[in-house]
Length: 144
Ligand SMILES: [Zn+2]
Image (cartoon, rainbow, N blue to C red; front, side, top):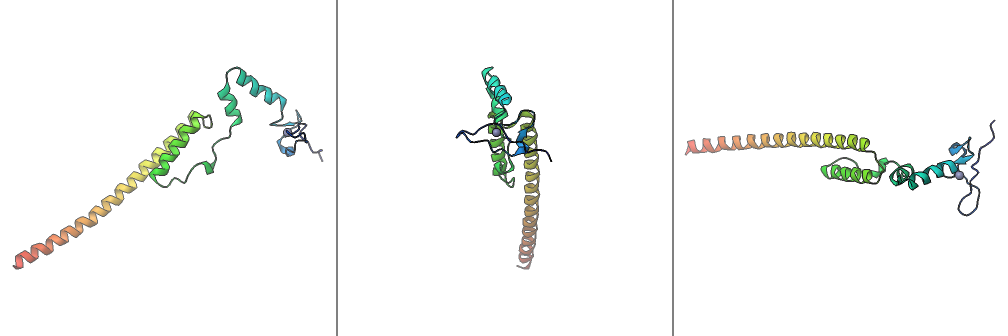
């Protein structure tokens, strides 16, 4: 059995880092947050004015719970707002944002089509009621 690899880094309060062995890089002996090489990369990126890049390395991707269920046009608007904010803060790439925006637009189109179909059904029912009403009126007038 391979010996358990523990991170060589220490936490802010001076204790040994408790990162699980699967997060420790065997070649460096450090976990991701204590890896000096990675820290340097982050610092260089920031120093070179690549702050956006460093932020991208640090920030997490969008999670499922970040987005409300897509079940009404208001939710679709919320999605677009979140996508815009995520692109602006570097949480989402332009490419991913494009793909999600396209999906939301398709959903809206499908939703609108469903709404229109429902409205047409409603109008058909109303028309049938009006027609039968007219027939009754006509009949009554004929009777008069
Ligand atoms: Zn560590």
